[in-house]
Amino acid sequence: MKFSQIAQSIAPSATLKLNAKATRLRLAGEPVIHLGGGEPKSKVPAPALDAAIAHLQTGEVRYTPAAGTPAMKDAIIAYTDRFYGRQVERANVMASAGAKQAIMVALLALVDPGDEVVFPVPYWVSYPDMVKLAGGVPVPVRAAGNSLLPTLEDMAAAIGPRTRAVLLNSPNNPSGQIYDAEYIRDMIRLCEERDVFLMMDDIYHRLVFDGAPQIHCYDYTERSVDDARILVLNGVSKQYAMTGFRIGWAVGPRDLITAMSNIQSHQSGGPCSVSQTAAVAAIEAIHGSVPVLRQELQESRDELLELLSEVPGLVVHKPGGTFYCFCDFRACSEFGDDCTALSEYLLEKVQVVTVPGAEFGCPGFLRLSYCGSREDIREGVRRIRWALDSAGPSTLRIGDRVIQR
Ligand code: PMP
Ligand code: GLU
Image (cartoon, rainbow, N blue to C red; front, side, top):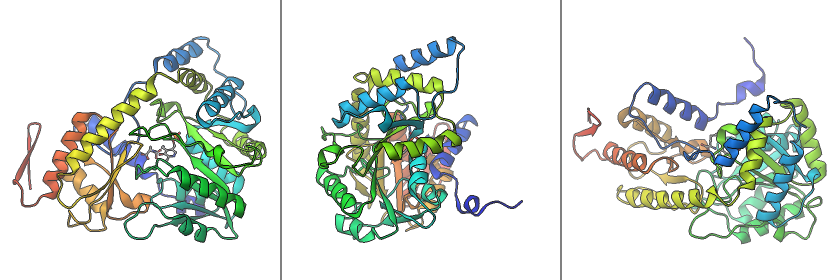
């Protein structure tokens, strides 16, 4: 069978592939510890569930406008007012099947074949493939030395005549780093000067720790939402633990939103109606679950950092947000840059799932998620320590099994 060049150039999402593998192994009764996941394990907020059930019970589950129901748009407007301090109109917002689709549709609306999209390394695993799907050229920008954030000068140097957009994700998946307000401000100015769009992937923006302030990107432009070169991307997946509902959104200039909505009207026809009802309810119950989740994640992060501090040679970058911790394993394993082999070894030997840093542009690193249970975090690090410490005990007990070195 012959497939398109695009199909041939796209790899499956490594994170989703590992999720599926971890689930498969668990269902087969294997004692797998999943430190690879990208979704909180807390229950969906009750108001969202109740709203979804009530919607289903009407027996009316229909198409909605391609860019989302009026109620969904109004919820996004209220969210934008509350968390970004900006009043926007329905024409400035659209809902999608996850932030993933919103990003994809935005790229399809902005990028012609050969156009470039610039983003820092490490980057979320899907960015390069999404840019390629849109016919564009991904331009990852690597920081000098051991830094996990390229300077503004590095980013400016990567923006050329074919650049259509800069894609930022803060707090960052996989590094957990928060890009500070000054960085965001300067990036907004740079994008305005160069007339390129700044796509702000804010999917983790409320999952920040140690009282880090919320960054209001619109505070750093003199322009109106319609004139600014800013597209904000967000969703319910992470903050409300609603990954399976597949609701994300975009906020930006009405012309761009219209172009994106037109594309979406042919692509999926819009997000699921029941999921929109549930997302509206979650957004309206805004005070409930997020601070609790944030506190739990911060405590998990603190415990993980303490446990990891006992792994000799491991270089840990302290996450300021998200539920990921990005670690440089090069000095504590024989695998060097080959983190894919290291990740496979950890899965096979001690049944711990991790995501290879190479998927995010950083060979030699692994991403460890701490959105699971505290028991899983403790057990996962215990097994990793044993697997890396060739001078340690020759056996490891996992439940009633004894693993030999
Ligand atoms: N951006 C980043 C950085 C992510 O980690 C994710 C996780 N899937 C997404 C976007 C997309 O999230 P979703 O499609 O579930 O809204
Ligand atoms: N964003 C999550 C992750 O990075 C979920 C998986 C995905 O959508 O790729 O693990």
